[in-house]
Image (cartoon, rainbow, N blue to C red; front, side):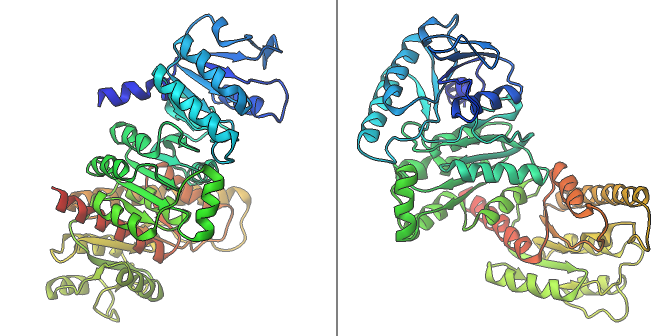
Length: 486
């Protein structure tokens, strides 16, 4: 662990940064990325390198790396491809140990670009320097206030680590997390992966105490066996969720021109994922939802699932998705049904899904949840309609803005109390509870505020029954893998 952390420290916790290609011209990459680094609050020294400027964004500039007054840990390079090999040579001579090459125009375009990429890798390996990129969006490490990145997004510190061969997808995931209230531990746009590859970053995140879940977008693998062996060690410690692009002929051609990746067959990758305990997903929505779904959940010990729903239709859709995903909508025991019958209204139809049929009187939903968690025939719970746990009703009639805002605040607070209760119960019984709800209110910006507040506290709440069931199946499958691996 120490060896891995030491290797990545200059990259993700640099005490000072050389910025080669910094610019005063708005719109240029060298200006945008430097500005983001400064806006993000980086606290170390920044040394812009540009022979044509005396100062850049108010910071004294230097003509060449050799003129810097100290040896930075990290070099950010945004200069034309033909100039990068010489710049890497200067960095090595200065003793810089990590480089982030955002510049595009290397192996993804072929020709001279491939030659330049091979040259920089050769120089870096001989000089003991690690490289991210080229052709990438940058990196993010919020706990270190490190934002040398193209997009101007600044997520809070959190528990999700993101590794993406696409800068665009890395940005999408980071932005989506921020909007939903979830921070990130690290974001790495790996680009062409000329030196460090996705498995290197996943290995680091596997040891990183800030990271609980790793999500990754991959287009191709340089060394499939190394990837498999590396990630397999990580999945025994924490979940790794991956989407693999380039499975069709059209997609494979696109990956070649995008990040110079050679896409492999879907069957081969599916097999590798099964062996390595990787949670395999097939869309960006599923990738993000699964990542947040793993947070703050105990791992299931089996696939026997009980469904609690405030409405019959949601329960039916959830049951269908469970069956498609390999979850058993378990037959509840006579003892469990008898206990539930004492709580639910006379018109309740005993069975699973447990339809509350508008019978949430005196906290019935919480009692039902506890009964199902305690039942020996269940391993996992789907809870659909979280508002059944709240001690608050809809806002009726025309009201002023102040009343609406107070109602929203009260609802948010009640929601957080409910989620703390769900968390305590699920961990007490060591069974995951995956939740989804619709909102019975249409006032103000209540919906977004609710989902954001729940996410800010580290809890995943989904908007429909299908994704909730899908994420439950991933938690169950990961638990099955850990049981086999142990």
